[in-house]
Length: 458
Image (tube, rainbow, N blue to C red; front, side, top):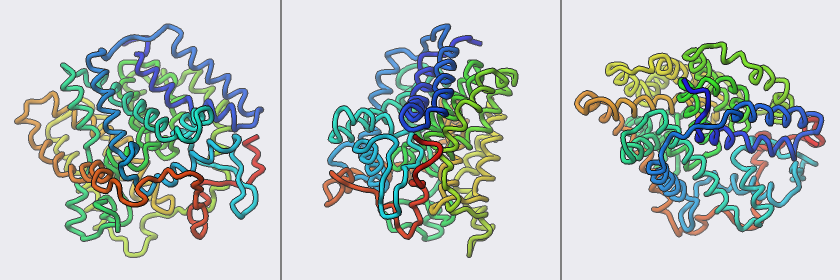
């Protein structure tokens, strides 16, 4: 095992941690920020003090960067492509961050409130736009997102060790086009949202997003989950990453609390593969008292009104609905993987258990719990399937390819929609002076705002 992380592993962890560092510097009360910043500086030095190793060659890294740029630009970020209905929210938060002092305090009719949201994806582009102007929002967000996706592809390449650039590109493309059989579910149930070719809510009560859906709709969740999975898969050969799992957890938490919850089982699996003693490091023990007060205090301020329920509390829910959801979203794919066999048995079994359990609980007006918590487990399942398809003889992996193809309509519809609806009136969400419609009968307001003054922000 190597005693040094690779340059891409270090870059991925720093990419995830940088927004949290900015938050501590400019949002948190000094009494909370100072110990957290000191800990992050020390942990980073501990990780990098022996240097880094090279891994993926330039001949592979260059094409992967180009693929990342093409996919991110095609997701709707590049004008004149159509942007989805989540982008008014994304741009509203970005404009609030660019146009106001940090921490952001607003008065939208309920008195002074502080912007309280997981800002991991937003803070770096917003910080750059404080220097460049709000007109640079689209370009900075595109570059920041493409950088993150490129790091995901590089971590996959490190773990898969492709024979050449073409195999590396194939692995990255297959990863992004992994999905459950949503269109089949929509065809069988007849249920679809009044939204162009959006199949994923066919089961009504829950949905598991495809990788492309994560990129197109909610990159703040997708990137955090995929990067953490890439690091944990590689941690079996780099135990020093497990020694800094606390820093990884809190960094992911600031991007997506749900995805942070979703990576916990896989941190334990990775630690078990290299020895749990690496988990019992000074860095991991110190991360809790150093970072948790500032980050968790801010994130959970005034969140008691957010909707929560067990799935059996929903009217019209049936166990048959859940079984159908399991089968079409992951069980067929997992059964074929099990029949073929994988060397990552423990990680595979834990991913299946997580995907079985997640639908039983719901959080948020649109059940963010089922949309975000399983993202790391889905990424693990996708990675294992890709590993089989790239390393096994094609006759042996053919059944898996067929099941993989059942999920293609979802990512194809998501990536083609911005092109199909380009140039329609109002297709671009980034308009000057846009504000967030936080009210909406108070359904969503509590997800973004907390009363101010707040004891966790300055």
